[in-house]
Length: 86
Image 1 (tube, rainbow, N blue to C red):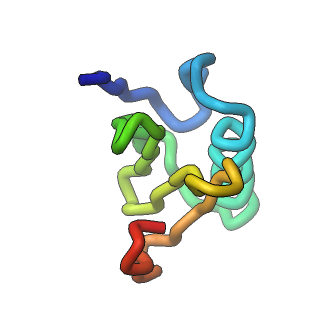
Image 2 (cartoon, helix red, strand yellow; image 1 turned 135 degrees about the horizontal axis):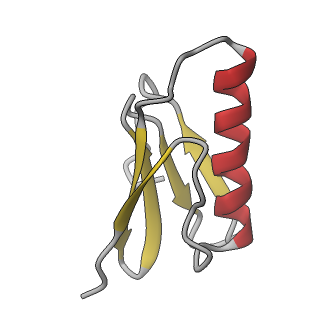
């Protein structure tokens, strides 16, 4: 079993995250800032599913790693996840 962690928006994400996930986290945080959203009290939660990181923001935004391509995919809070978990 692999445990996760939490960190604040704008804070340092765990260095062990794959580069595509770190990039997706930065992208989401830039978009929030560009939209003028006050996310200063929001936190990211990192967990693992089938040995792959799943990162969720307090607003429900989820970042998952595609098992085939290794790319990070951002799912907005109102996005329905595909039946395969992507």
